[in-house]
Length: 584
Image 1 (cartoon, rainbow, N blue to C red):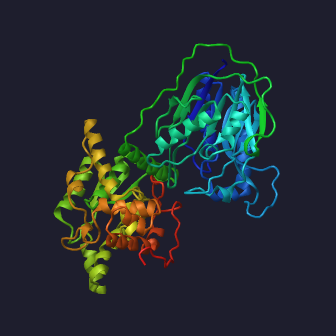
Image 2: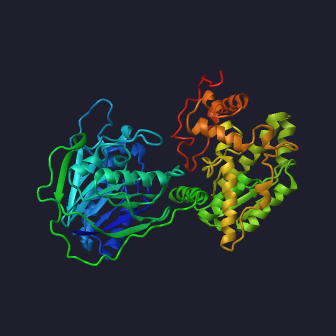
Image 3: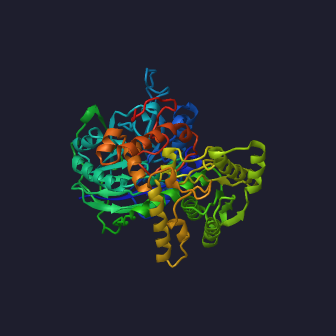
């Protein structure tokens, strides 16, 4: 059978950085060429970054993407890579745009192109447009209607983009009908916990349906709240894994494949879902037979806590770096949330770029102050203490607050202190709230909810404890100092805004609370279904009421790394003004 050396480049693109993304594509194409690749591929919208959101509706940006693609093709040719086909995702528009109700103006397309000999040999648009979760692609794009097939060294390679594999029908069965020897899908599929297993089963299933070897190329890095974990996969037509790339690691998977020769009378015309076969022949002759040298490798999967923690590190690093921030500031209470956020920040940016501030009040316990200082000592982050007691006394003398207003004043003084330091010194403030607190409104607006980014915004409290234990264990296994003081993990969680306060004064045990929240928030289960799952009806009703009435708080919370199928943000869109109650 003919041979093909395939290079899959899982790279990190930045939205809008056409020049920087082009440089990365040239760099990795050069690397692939040096390794003797015959076909090179880059992820979905690698040239523009993903997702571009409303930039897709700006004709100036669409045209800039098209021009950058043409310039990239010319540069690859000028640098000696013209004979090497390169598949690149970019933002395009339909050449036959027609104003039509319900379609985006200008008919933008989520597209990919095959660059060859200084030009665009073939281009096509994503056929299936996702419209769930964080995706709004019906808002932005018009679908493609072709089944693109490029012949490389006598092998027919069918091409697809991300959702074309995730949905039934369309390009997968069309690849079989077209007689493809390889199905190559370029993707920018955001990370979610446990998605690696789902992704593998998907690729296996689609390979069997397509009847050919299938390569799934993924993006890595972060964009706003989204993280991309790589994990590119190649399987044979039976679904057996040939190669698998590392998670959260930029790089190239290069492997030798033996694939069926293209048929002399290859099918043409319209196939599955009305897709029209668009076949371009770049090279009919197979490469001279050679001894396969590159197998692509198989990167072992990360354990669950390591995978989630890695996503949180990548998310924060990308948000800070891509927005021009080199350092972060965080209030250190001695509690578990600020401790895990500080550890994530040190791993993402380096301890020298993390600034911690202890802001004790008269209710702060000695052990909490000691735990904050111990965390700083263990991690090496920059540390200072700014007592808020004098500020608190001045406010109380003027306002004479009591009860909850008095408690929340302390949190707001801390938020004001952090923002003042941020303005003075230039760090961005990290908000340490977790998903459990955000769900039930157990946070103070303009207090502990203040910040530019929330590293654990999508992490339930019970998972925060598991991540902290994993991070300490991982440090011990590497012979390093565990970053998080043991007492921060073992002591009862408390906001310490009044004497003897603990979280369980207001909330149920976190393991129970999080189980209820996962059913309600992540799975959209109602009260009756949650009670039927075995939870106390009164507790469920109370919890759901807290969630429903806290929407206005969540809407004002900063962005944070998404790790679940339904985070607070674009995943979950509920009206703030809403009188519907599950418990009514």
